[in-house]
Image (cartoon, rainbow, N blue to C red; front, top):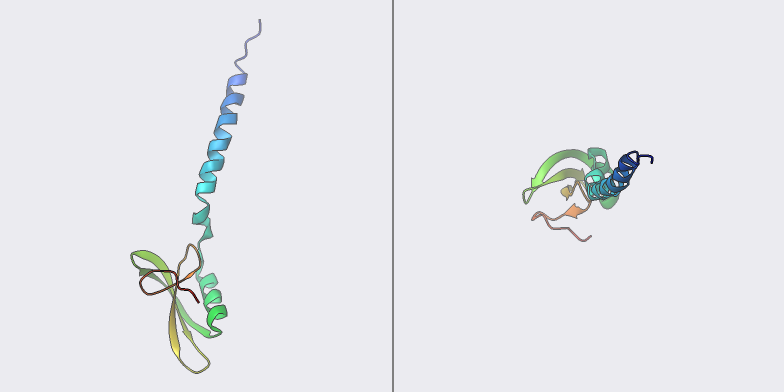
Length: 98
């Protein structure tokens, strides 16, 4: 009678693959980070203004991009963006609805 020890690694791989898939799916939001250039481009699209600077910042103890823009009328505005979702934040850290 032949030994079936060769089946054990195959059975373990069939168990490990779904576990890796779940872990990979759970880590997906970490890959959605908004880069400095993406934050500048998004702020420029939203305000139709020229970007002066983009700096890392913190809003309500969470990381954020602080994007400073100047409008065609010469008004300087600061836009806070969530680096994970790419959404504009209010000064208190809540999502702003534009």
